[in-house]
Image (cartoon, rainbow, N blue to C red; front, side):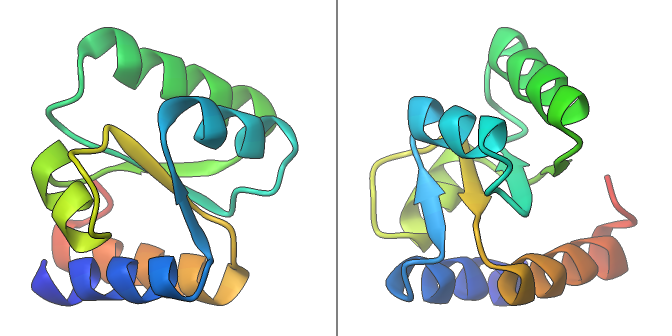
Length: 104
């Protein structure tokens, strides 16, 4: 998991990751999000909202780690969700999650 979190931090520093519920939703609706990561400890309502948006707009999403881990990885306060807006980062992170966690 540490290597995935490091990659999230790198994507953030490269300007290829956005966070914050409203901003992530806007990127999903504009179909600019390649991969959306939702914290496993986000509220059920938040999880459902992101799942429904991603399903409707056909954006890949995964439940991953905790709000604290996502926040720490990108140098911010705890985050319920983040979106990768670069295909290279998105594909790499997705493949690492599926390889290590079976695409949970």
